[in-house]
Image 1: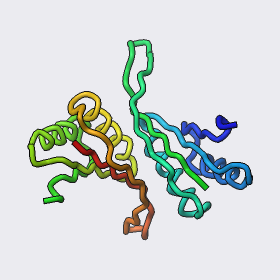
Image 2: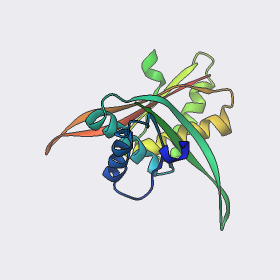
Image 3: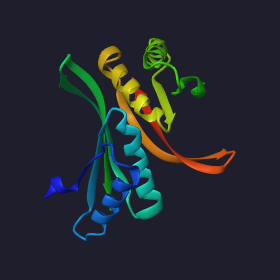
Length: 90
Length: 90
């Protein structure tokens, strides 16, 4: 069931992701949610985590924050992109 | 002397910050550097940390990564902005 608790941050508005996380945490069985983002979406991932933590689910804490570099295969060959994983724990 | 080892990420190109960090780490007395960024610059801060770690100073590791929310006083009143602090340790 772990996969259900991963949020991939893309082009939707910030609050869509916040509400998705809050909804999941309101399910008693969900104790951990991982927010994942790459490239420019990293800033949005941090916004999402902070808004969730401060305005909606005050009992959550950061269990871990991991930075990494991923190699993307594009038409012009491989390119590197930074990524972030933020683990929220209830 | 701690203040000298803080890098504030702004509008300069990513590689400017990477080179500033590499230069500081080449000083034997510098063992820790803190990268700080707010808002949209957070993605760039992660790029800077990852490029420094993987391409230039392979001995470094992440000592800590902290997310926070800062209140900025603007003309239209206070607004919240997310921030990141990445501590690099040699």
